[in-house]
Length: 109
Image (tube, rainbow, N blue to C red; front, side, top):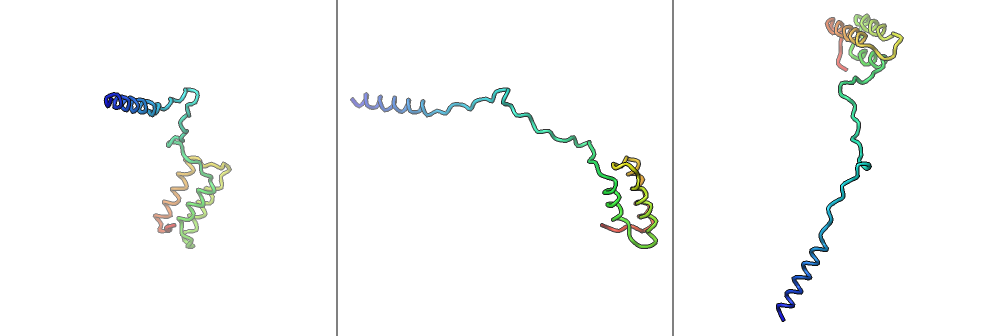
């Protein structure tokens, strides 16, 4: 009789274990797939307006009277009709700041 009771206990535990197994997660269908997020290419330059570029560079040039010619040159370089500066315009503005630095007319922002 003890064999029958123990056999029933083992069978009950086996059925309980079989029922309690979790089903593997369902694989998402191809139509439910979420596309990966679009990331901007690192090679693309961030567009900057000419006025912002000039204003940023003007903070590098000192306000002393002997440095006023560099500030004037930089403001004139920023008065071109296009909004987005071309690379040659940016190079020209950077050269003006470099010339001001060579003349001792730069300051830290």
